[in-house]
Length: 221
Ligand code: GTS
View 1 (cartoon, rainbow, N blue to C red):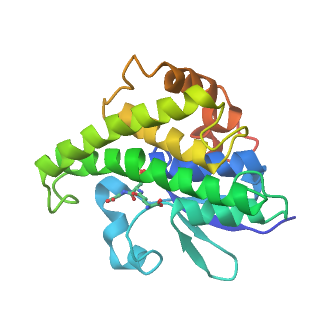
View 2: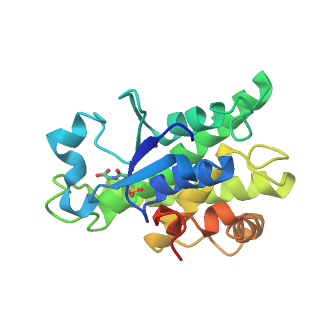
């Protein structure tokens, strides 16, 4: 018995991956039902979905009281707070501040930049969904993401995780960025050795490794 939540999601998507990883880290998989929203059909831009999330993006969490929570950061904060023992978003004011900063920085400098590259510098989700594209903006954002990779490499040369000594939401956000970078063929530059080593270790974490298959019915083999 537990709270039943719905997550509107796209199983292989980099942003949905962030919430899938958080769910697994918190042991909440059994309390969630995944609802597929087809990005390539533009289902996330239809009025029915926009009523759930004005921004027209995935993932979205629906609580059993009908509340919708969009934004990976907000969803992760909610999930992490549920058991009263936060592990991903910080316990002390200092931890919370640093983790939030580094996660936001991972969005601004890496994940969101790669996402803009995908939507503007590549065919993205196709002509039905990408109604405005600005390739120059897209390529600039790809360059920004490459600079971001160097920034996080520098961080990881000095500490084991993105926000310090422990795995947190900030690591999950960088993982999302590198998943997206992999999908759009923007590899981590080979000189970013610390980032590459960290990412190799992250990919061995069960929450990261099993994130796509986790939406299969529990007990399915
Ligand atoms: N700021 C949002 C968040 O953090 O939740 C961004 C979410 C986002 O961009 N999600 C992607 C999306 O809905 C999903 S995926 O690309 O990772 O699968 N993209 C569709 C679109 O048209 O922007």
